[in-house]
Length: 224
Image 1: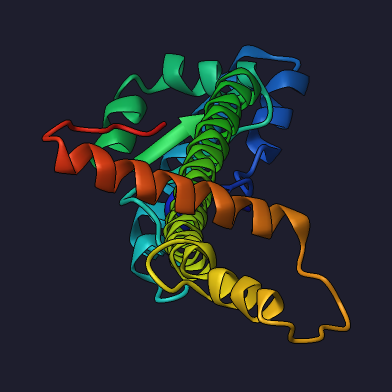
Image 2: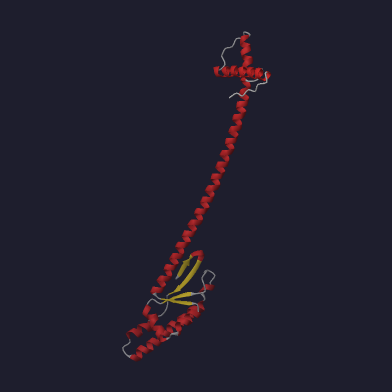
């Protein structure tokens, strides 16, 4: 069995350990048969450890595995019986990069793998959230910059508009004044000018006259 780990890594678990000698050991009816079956069982476990070490799964090009393989023994007492018969099995397994696992230890290992995947998913989610936040910030900044540019253009357009429109009713010989003079000279007009514009022109003429008089007297004038 291949267990997939984060970062595209793998963990190989072998579950082909022979338990036929252990079955004979459990069913033996005399001491001699029991001892012989136990010796055969310990040898079977030891041979399987050596066999798995020689397979070198981690060198296969299709796998990205650490230099270990998990040897699964489905009966806890079977492994304990083998260790009682040959205490060196555990140390030889470690030296051969073989991790012997029973149901309890295998489940613990798989729970660790599950936690690793959970951390991986959280990290991936956090990274994706950071990317989205960055994209959102860039979009927002671009929008704000554009709106500021539009605002500046609107302000500039308004200034130009006010300056152009003020030429109608302020200054010497402004257009509204000239139009009013045409009317005073008897020029016939079909439509009257907007009263607000005419009124602004009159006020502007009055202010210009006042400013000229005050300036002649050396008085500064501030109009609000």
